Length: 251
Image (tube, rainbow, N blue to C red; front, side, top):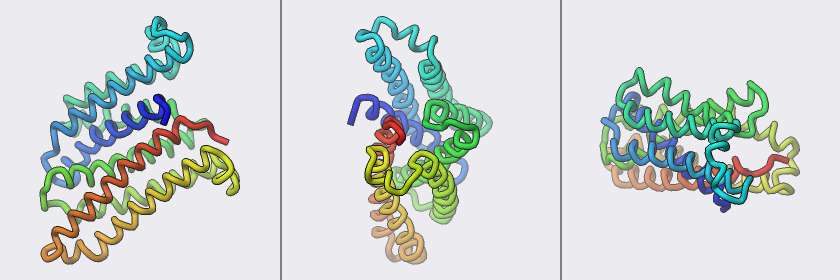
């Protein structure tokens, strides 16, 4: 994995932790995890600043031009805004009236430097990011909290998120890959296949939990939570692969 892909993956993990803290608090019913949100905010901010330094080094062979990169280029400005919004959200995620607009703004900074080349694709990319934060964030904080509340709400969030992810991700893949053969003949397509395989594993575990363990959660509680933990771990892998995917050239 390249430094650029690693920084992007770290930023995406931070995004999920930061935005997902609000999803868990306002829609699952938990209190949230301030340490998770703090880690998320710092990950996003540090990854954004690291990306600015990396871009400056790639362009100039030194870090001397990082200020010009941060303020004089579109990617640099978006990364600078991303760091600022992440720090604001770090202190405002407990209040819905702050969490909602700041989360949208943070998602916008990611989509604005993605492969999206049209307003429709940009909108789908935003939806894709929001759905990923909802599914992964709610699941992750449920696992971390050890709480037994909100399982039904978590399941509904997961189902809705998966539908949005399938629609938005399918459209993006169709636009970016173009042909079926490009899935195994291009680097972008191969990385996408790995991501799809991991997502399929996560969906399989989510379906197993919903159809088998959730109706029997009182008697199969340990298996239910173990399955959630494995699902969350797989989705962290999805974020790592997504970092590689977003820094790969489209066919």
